[in-house]
Structure formats: C-alpha cells, structure tokens
Image (tube, rainbow, N blue to C red; front, side, top):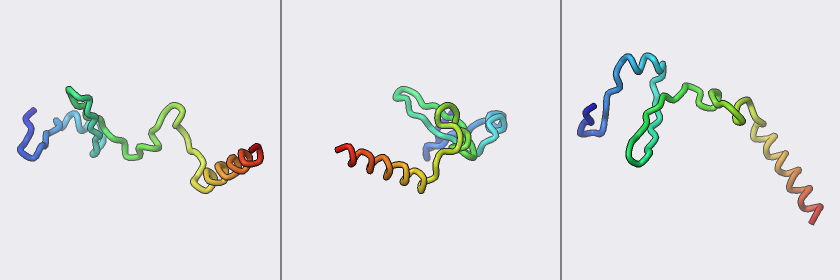
Length: 75
C-alpha cells in the first residue's frame, strides 16, 4: 500500500466488507502496525472476565464506600 501525503492508506473493499465495521483501531508494535476492526459496541463485545454487565456507577460507589467503612473500623 502507498501512504498518502496526509498519512492515509486505503483498506481494500473486500476486507472492509468482511470486517463489517466502519471504524478501526491502530496498534503500534514498534516495527509494525496492526489495523483491527473496532466493533460498533466495543464494551458489549468484550470476552472473558470482562464480559457481561457490571455494576453501574452508583452501585460501584456504594460498594467502595462500604469497603472503605469496613477498613476504617478495622483500623
């Protein structure tokens, strides 16, 4: 591929259609870069230990406040 003066490259149409995504993430590995499709919902597409819906921010704050209060009682 040729890089334009503006630093742009063209991703072939068959690759774009296979990815079914209009956004990509660029990973700089030092001696090379990797271009990966970025899902429409990056958080919803997580796998492994990050999969699923976690507590919302209010629940997270309450959990942390409870833990902090328990730590203070032990001190």
